[in-house]
Amino acid sequence: MAVSPTPSRGGGGVSSLISKAMFEQMLKHRNDAACQGKREIAAFLAQTSHETTGGWATAPDGPYAWGYCFVTEQGNPGDYCVANQQYPCAAGKKYFGRGPIQIAYNFNYGPAGRAIGSNLLANPDRVATDPTISFQTALWFWMTPQSPKPSCHDVITGRWTPSEANLAAGLVPGYGVITNIINGGIECGKGSTPQQEDRIGFYKRYSDIMGVGSGNNLDCNNQSLDFEQSRSPRSSDVLLLQYDLFLLVGVDCHSIGVVKDALDSFYHY
Image (cartoon, rainbow, N blue to C red; front, side, top):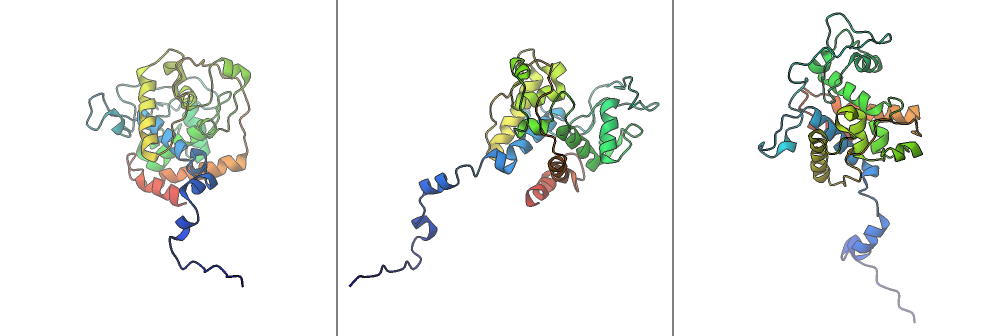
């Protein structure tokens, strides 16, 4: 007579049924940055940490532990006003760097303000004094393509496909292109520069802390500034959803340096 196998009464649980090798094979990409968005968060915080850094080479805990120190551009900045019919400068106002991304110039304050519903041409100081608006402007810049440049978001999430001309100009997907988008005229196409090395240092540190790889093409040493319009998906529904999620980074921040609770909200959402 055939004997039926005796059912397991607990034993080793799931681990007795699925080995570590099987688990790794079944969920091969569970920690991929593309699944969790961690790489994009690391990149955003790294770029904005550089823009607001107070670190120096021998700083306690290292130079890459000093992001989000300054709300406004240091030194004696000019008015950053250029002729622009669509976004003219307001009398007596200055459009120097403010906020996490250090948004500058009237041609950026104008459309950023329009996108978030605040007249920043007339009130540019709101970027420094209102934490939510401060982060909204940074995230507007991050999410918005400025033709022919793609958005930082599209680059870090792999949504941007460079043209053949872009590839020939060294504009290959990676963190370096984001630096080029933000400040390529100063930092890119000139070999290694201290500014971009600082951006890379922040990015590597945050990537390590968050447990994600930093990827390839981190610098813009040999990149041209001449982007050619290339394929970058513009699904408004997807972009608006991503933008809304990223706005959670700025919710309930009491100062520009307090982002932990907002990031917790981002993950919880």
